[in-house]
Amino acid sequence: MSEMKSTRQVLIKAASLFIVFSFLLPVIKVGGVGFKPDLIALVLVTPFLLLTRKIHRFKITKRFKFIAILLLFTMAVSNNFGAYRWGPSNYSFLFPTEYLQIFSRVGVFFLFIYVGNFQVVTERYFIKFLSVVFLIGLIWGTAQFLGIGFVNKISVDFYALTGKQQVGFERANVRGFGTAGNIITWGGLCCIIFYFYYFLCDYSRVLKVSGCLLSIANIAFSASRASMIALLLSFLLVFLLKIILERNFVKTLRTITSVVIGITVLYLIAIQIIPDRISYIESRFTYAERDMTEEGRGRQIAFFFHLFSQDSNNFLFGIGKPVLNDIDYLEVEPAFLFIAYGVVGVLLHYLLVYYYYRTVWETKEISKSRFLFLFSIMTAMLIFSLGFFFFREPYSGMLFWSLAGYFLGCSMREQTTMLSFKK
Image (cartoon, rainbow, N blue to C red; front, side, top):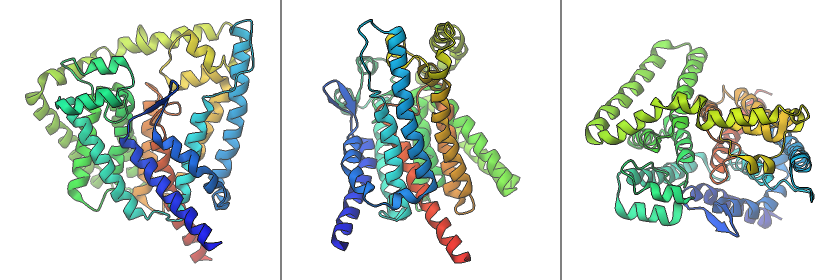
């Protein structure tokens, strides 16, 4: 029995490290379906994880599991309701294939809670491993927008997910997509990576500063407004929370000032070296209001809400993802969830967020750095989702839940130890 348990732990450890390492790997396409190799590792390790039983004892895993089951039912109802009302006359039952995204996120979250809580991979080793993996990815993304030939060729051949992104490297103003294969996704991932280096990478000052600066550079040169706004607003909200919790306004103000100075220096250097690209980034914000009102996402929202409001029955379960996709594209996630799955679907998705924040808040006294990291990345992703996808990012969405699960698991472990000691 002990030998079987040891083998299981080794497999879980190998799978968890490979899932994180997959951040550097391109998307695999099989039969027109694309996915990162991390999904394969998760599917293979899931039976071993289920056999542990210990993963089912946590309140958050019980709640997430129950909500995930309800989401499967809701998605099936929404998709079939929509297809019956809006689809072709030869309607047949539709299984919600998009549920794979919920399964993968909840599954990897459970896996890494287990890995962190039982220290299958020690925290110090995990942080060092992440630091190296993320640094390689950031350097790769930096090389893209600097126009290094072989990097761009490999990126176009292996990482680019669409022909539009491939052609993008032929333009003067290259928008880097790093290892994500998608420009906006890459910007969102770099927000998470920034907070990782800022709050958790404490064993090397040089690596911490380098990681933060490269993360900001990659966000900037992805020219993703959603990412830049997400980082800025979440940073301000997190430090407002830090002031409230620590009641040390001077220290927090000093930290914010140093970050602002650092970003300003980077901007002044960049505008001298690459003025055309800085001008391009600035132009993206010049047209931001127009894109959110008359064109782009603003047009998408207006169109769908007009269509949606024609039948009051849509409000409960929506029109389903297949119908939504057939009609048009919608990049604002809260609106997407509401149109596709109605009020029920929206509430269930954000119930996951509520229980996440609630559990993170309960561990705030265990480790301030972990607490601020976990709070920061969720806040950043929720803001980011107003311009793209968080729950529904099809290729790189597991990274967030991997990091969140691991470091939340670490804090829950220490919380349990503390409570046992008090007894």
